[in-house]
Figure 1 (cartoon, rainbow, N blue to C red):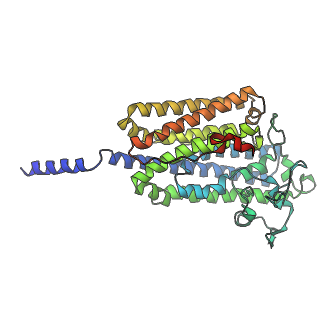
Figure 2: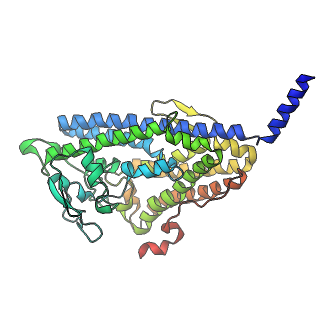
Figure 3: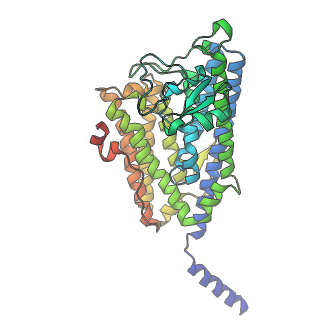
Length: 420
């Protein structure tokens, strides 16, 4: 008799809790586990970059510069897959500008071509060239930059004078120091910085080779410390993990917000459609290295990782578990199938851009005015991202969540305003 009473009580308890409550918790755990793995991989590959940078500075040559470039390219792949954690997670979005801010006014950092526009009313420090300027005035204060340190870059130069284009830290500052400016416009070719920009003594080109090396090492060291901090936030007990798992409703909203805002306003709009409207290679994400095709691809892959609850680490290990797809399939199998189909269409389109670039048709060439093939490739990616974002919007009511608007972009919502 007591057994029957216990069973009845257990049944009553199970009926009082949503059937998917435990599944939601598991989905958020998977989401946090994948974030931790992605930031750990970003840190691992950044440390490999640090080794290559140290080797370049110790023994400058065409070979050590090429190795540092390759290490930078490898470091981008896992990092781009983390961007889906922006927008919905304030701890990530508030931090992200330290490591991935773009576009940048590269004249702040180093020498630039004579065609570079230089200082303006919007940015008086666009041509500062701190590598050649050991002492300068910043907003009425004399800055001693005789020693180029991580603290100088992050505490003084980054967003100097409150200007977002004064990017002094992160992947793109390092990219510029390795490749130099891409002066080819929408023609073939990436940046072509000579290895002798790091050579000692009379072999030095560009001037101030020792300070250029110091800047590159400081920026790389800073990237390591920033990634160490973020990886710790997603580890057990970290603030990011605790925040996203503490409230299941808020956690699911964060997941959908990151997926939708990256798909729509950020990637489809600001990173792809805007550059195509303006036919401007300065709007491509990895503009110095011509690596934009990979950045777009791995951003898209990061979105799909989150929906499917699976991520393949740089060592081949797979991190997987309960997924958003599982939740949606339980509530509306047809919608889950639609979302998966949209994700596949997008990845096919981004994969086509990537394949074309690897075949010699670089992303900045695709942006050229009148290039119908390039426009078709980019717009297929834009359309795929927009359509998958629309499908993500339909997930809110199915999951019993209040609907929210994803981040927008004038290039999608009001294209005419782009030209004013």
